[in-house]
Amino acid sequence: MSEKQLSLYIHSPFCSHKCGYCDFNSWAQKDVSLNRSWLTRIKRDILYWRDKFSQTSLNWRSVFFGGGTPSLLPDEILRELGEFLFSQGITSSGLEEFTVELNPEDVSLSKLDVFKQMGVSRFSMGVQSFQDSYLRRLERQANVATNHRALELISTYWKGPWSLDLMYALPGQTLEEFQQDLDAALVYNPQHLSLYQLTLSTARSKNWDQAEESELAEFFTLKKKVLESLGFEHYEISNFAKNAEVSIHNKVYWELGEFLGVGPGAYGMLSPLGMLPSDSLGFDRFGFHQKAPSNFDSWINDQRSMDEEIVEKRDFSLHAKELLLMGLRLKEGVKKARLGEYISAQLMSSNATKGLLEENSDSISCSSKGMYLLDYTVKMCFYALDQAFPGLDSVQVDPIFGR
Ligand code: SF4
Image (cartoon, protein in one colour):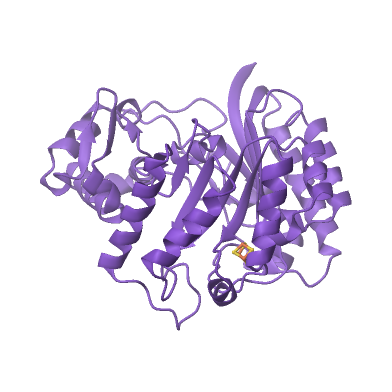
C-alpha cells in the first residue's frame, strides 16, 4: 500500500455579517438550518476522498478549519464534526496541528472547550484593529472591548499556541495608530501574528482610498522593525512567529504541499493518484482545484460527484509559477530541487530578477528588496520563466479520475 502525507482544509462559509472588505467565500447566515446541510455535505466530501485513497495509507499532517466563521457554528454541529473527523482517522492519529479561526465575539470558555474536545490545538483570531472607528468601517462585529475580552480569555485559559490577525494601511490610518495596535496586541503575548495590508483588491467598498506606495513601505518597515526587535521571526511576508511557532498548515500551502479542501469554494493540491508521468523538467506533482460555487445553495444542492466538479489540472508552466508565487512569500524561499536545476539557473541569471532574488545552497529566496516588492518580484520571475520556456503553456498532462 502506498503512503501519502496530507493536510485538510475545512471551509465553513457562514458569518453573522459580511464585512465591508471581505472577498472570501462567505455569506451572512440567514437560516441556521443550513448548518446541518453544510455538515452533511462536508461528510460526503471527506468520504469521497477516503474512497479515492482507499489503496493509500494516509498520514494526516494538519487540519485548518476556516471560513467564514467556524466559531459561529453551534456546539452540537462542532461536536458532530469532531466525532466524524476522529472516526475517519483524521484527528485520531498524530496530527501536527489543528487550527481553527475564531472571531472575538464568539470566544467563551465553553466554546474553547468544545474545540478542545474536537482535537483543536491552535487558534487564529481575527482581531483586525484596536480602534472602534476602524472596526466599524471594516464592518466587523466585534468592538475594541470585545477584542480585549476575547484576548484576555484566550491568553489566560488556552495553554496551546494561538495567533492574532491585524490589518494595517486602513483608510486614513496613521503609523502611530498602527503602532498602538501592535502594542495592544503584544500585551497578550501572542507567539504568532499575521499582519495583513488592506489592499483595494480585498476592499469591496468603492469609497476606500488605498494608502500611497510610500506609506505602505512605512507600514511594512514598522511591523518588521517592531516585531523583529522583540524576537519574532518574519518567516512569511505577512506572518511573524516567536519560538518557531509557525503555522504548520499554512506552510503546506506556501510550500505547495499536498492538501484537500472541503466546503464551498475550497481547493486542493494533489499529485495524481496513480504514477506521475516523469518529465524532463523535474517537477514533482500536479494539482487540482474545485470550482468555487456562486452561492451556498448551488453548492449544497449540487448532486454531481466530486469527479465532475474537480477542474483545473496544472501544466508544467502553471505549476512552476505557483511554486514561485507561494514559495517566495517565505523567508526560506523555494527549494531548488523543486524548481529543477535548469529553471533555478534561468531565474538567477535573468536580468529581470536582478537584485530581487538570492541564491542559497539549496534554495532561491527573495532579497530584502525582493520581499518588500514581492508582487513585482513574482512578476519578474514569471517573465524570466516565459523567456526560458516559450510555449510551455501548451504542455498538458493527462487528466485523472477518468476524465
Ligand atoms: S468574518 Fe471574516 S470571512 Fe466573515 S465576512 Fe468578515 S472577513 Fe469575511
